[in-house]
Image (cartoon, rainbow, N blue to C red; front, side, top):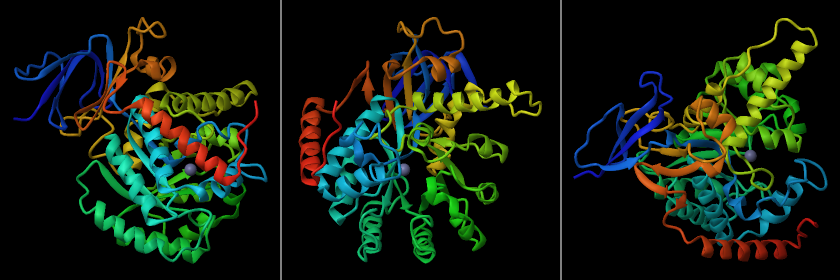
Length: 447
Ligand SMILES: [Zn+2]
């Protein structure tokens, strides 16, 4: 018999317009799937889970993170993207090259358990740490062990390009781990893209992805590199399609952004990173003006926290600041402010779409996978709840994340992660961090 659980009497935000949202309702999980959403559901044999002091909603979805950097958390909070003392110089050119497979494995575990703890049920792991084939195996093992739903986006190592082995390893890994699409882990190709590669190399990577029937995820409009119209060249050659997620897009031209919209591409904004590290102005309004509803992404834990509350608040605050500034300057034709409903969708439904998983996750829709979080409403930071969506977007934080289910399986209950020895993981994180930092001859920031 399939195991079932009934989440009883919660405030239910299905984020599916057909299903609706409820101030009090139930969600029935059968096996890995959502069986029903509505008031007064009955299920005789189901385990009853009291959700009466909870908001029940789809898990958050991160559409781009370099998860291997987990052991480098907060190492670069005062460094920008570009320059002599920068993320590119320190993280990608100094620390990444000394990573062993086990450092990538532990870095990933740290990031993944942090994500689950924060209510993230799906993550795209933009994994450009594949110095050897074994790095890929190690990262995939971490993804599997964590129980999270993930897109493993195979990335070419930044510091050693070109490397003739890479395309072969990609094909091998695809065959070994991703012969089915009906599993928790799916595959995408993380391409450095036309701003960081010769046109022909970018083109051949995208072709490889399409040969493998894999989605493409690519950084574009990245600081100075994004200002030279390289994506436009790919667009003019007819290479932009609806199988691609474009990350940042900060310094793209309007014409390039329009190409993304016209070809059905999806966008991933990493607003806190873009603002603090100098990628360029977060293009939220330019996306909205073209009908592009973005997904959100944490990108690098070297600089920013691992939760989607920060993501949602950064984007809505910035968009409001820019438009109210226009209003105060006397402009009359200003865009509409984003609402909290927009942001909660960016952090869920749109993330699922960008990760190629909208048919499986992103909303509480019967038939979809049961990727569900319970957010406590009885904490002193949030009661009384007067507007549940507003409470999630502007009021809550990770301390409200009580329970996390992925494909119906509980990965966190009663505020505690399940199936992981955190003390041991912490020890391993420090050991790997120590190895990487000392091997690279890197000095940790002084206090
Ligand atoms: Zn990135």
